[in-house]
Amino acid sequence: MHRTLISESKNHIGEQVLLQGWVDIKRDHGKLTFIDLRDRSGKVQCVGYQMMGELTPESVVELVGKVKERPEKLINPNIPTGTIEIEVLSYSVLNKATLLPIEVQGDGKDISEEIRLKYRYIDLRRERMQKTLRKRSTFSHKLREFFYDHDFVEIETPMLTKSTKEGARDFLVPSRLQKGKFYALPQSPQQYKQLLMTAGFERYIQFARCIRDEDLRADRGFEFTQLDLEMSFSSQEEIMRIVEQAVTFAVKAVGGVLKQEPFPVIRYKDAIAKYGADKFDLRTEEEKQQGVLAFAWVVGFPFFKKVDVADEAEKRDGKSGWTFTHNPFSTPIAEHMAWHLNGEHIGEIETAQYDLVCNGFEVGGGSVRAHTPELLSATFKIMGYSDQEIQAQVGHMFEAFRSGTPPHGGIALGIDRLAMLLAQETSLKEATAFPMTSSGKTAIMDAPARVHAEQLQELGVKLEETTPKT
Ligand code: ASP
Image 1: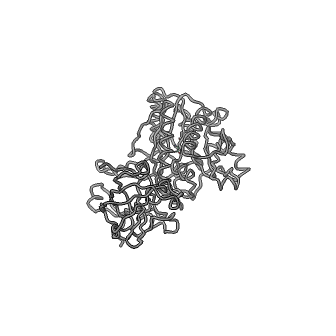
Image 2: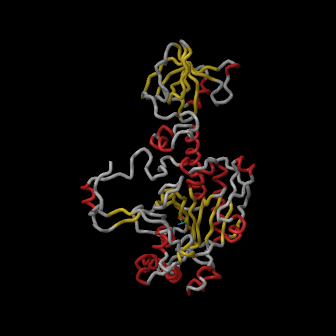
Image 3: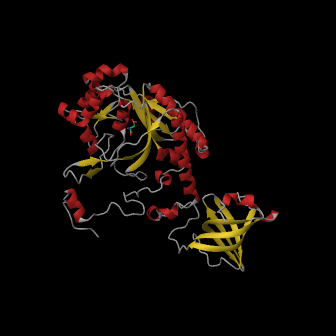
């Protein structure tokens, strides 16, 4: 007998079906035992006569039963299978669940974060989490579909790489074979995606995992996923338009409601004057209740800002006291090109950067790039790098730029944030399967963790303090 999915069982009235799933809820009524059986497609009520009494919630069972129409007065209008029930003929337990440390019923928001993440595999069974992660999957699928339909190529870039500046600290990975040398995990695929433009792909996307060693905030871990995109021979307006089309298509495909189309475009200065920040929420109170998504573009950003001396990564990047606001690989706007090349009016130089905001969050950011050595070199000069340092940092980009690199630009969209907003959640963790705790501990498995002395020796790494903490 083949398995029937619960959602399809109502098409088999009067027939016997084989169902497999989890015991969602169990109720004993004397000789009758009722369970709601749950699989990936839904839930259905199953009734056993003088059987199933020993079943425990969340056990995995397989049962054979007859699909019966419920009498009118017993119909449950709240679930799609509410018109039927399964009369269980036989069953077997495939895996018995002991008493679980957390409840699967309910939204789980009253359970501590630490415990939810320790038992994330149970926590993810709850309906809210299942819906959010499935919606996230469909949203990503729709974005991919849109970009494939528009001639984009999906290409993977390395995880073990050299530092590429996005304004955070790097996570470093020691090399075993070349002791004393380190790889950096990518803060973004920025340079590789630009090199793919040099390579002639013209249109690239990747669902890229990015890793940045930043101070943790309540809902931010060290890694995130971005839909990374780059395209050649396209103006800022063309890039913004195609990204907007993709976002509109994918948001609507998962039932999202947009406040405004096309997305309004607001200048950075106006945003600061009006909202006091470059990310803002355009929704009315009523729209907030309805879960409307209010996207807007922000343009006209300054290229450079004064280094925040409290921020070590910024201090390291901006040796002159100036550092980039968004991306050192951007181009300034055409009107400010001369200032940029001459290092004049640094605070006033505007970058061809565009951010996408939604409901108070920055959900994307991109720019038209520098595609000549002179321009990229000028950016690093303004930040106080010597010719030698510039060569060491981005000499490989200069070489690429001298080999026939087309004008290009791109963007990265924050998939975790978009998924969070689509699910009307307020924390990124609710839209991520295995997020970190607020203190930087991984879900379920206990990392960061100490490693064996031999492993460190192999890597040529010596710890300053070696007493294991208990
Ligand atoms: N590399 C940038 C980032 O990861 C995005 C971009 O400019 O495409 O934030």
